[in-house]
Amino acid sequence: MIFLTKKLFWEDAYIREFEAIVTNVDGNKILLDQTAFNGRGGGLPGDVGWLDNTKVLDSVKQGDEIVHIVEDELKIGQKVYGKLDWEKRYKIMRMHTAAHLLIGIFANKEGLLVTGNQLGYDESRMDFNMEILDKEKILNYVEEANMISNKGGKVKIYFVKRSEAMKDKTLIKMAAAMPPDVDEWRIVDIGIDKQPDGGVHVSDLKEIGKIVVTKFENKGKNNRRLYFKLE
Image (cartoon, helix red, strand yellow):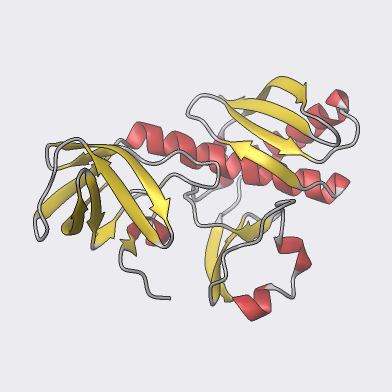
């Protein structure tokens, strides 16, 4: 797979600082030859931080690229030192892996698919195609998720040829979405769940902490919403 911007967070999600060269400028929209900033998309907020002394206000996925929205205009060819707002990034890494853990349990126990999600720094939400909202059952599943995360387990990330991945029907967890039409899929495997994913995760389930349900909502026919936070 060849991308114009090298995604350093695909190799190591714990990279907080890096050096790069500005390859394209469109006003306050900047492309780099490599980046540790994960762009907004798929329910995840974009990373923020700094390029030298210039604030990165947002980062956005645009096709295979990561577009950095900066406060001050930079110049093509300029060498920059990138630094993530690590506190925010790490919160999303924990939230994202927690979401995969819940997805895995809900899919295995109920055969449920995700119909929507939005991860936040302090609270996140997930929608499932559950016919009837059974709060007690969901709380039991969340408790099971906490037992698994407390025990710990390595988060594995690897690439698989699309033709091979398509043979495994259990990889698709989104009700109305398919991974992009690329030759290889990036797979995130936490044991109880594995699925195509281009985002950032912790390296061990122990880092998630405790998942706490904050609210339930009915969001139309066969669509149940779960809000949660991490402690």
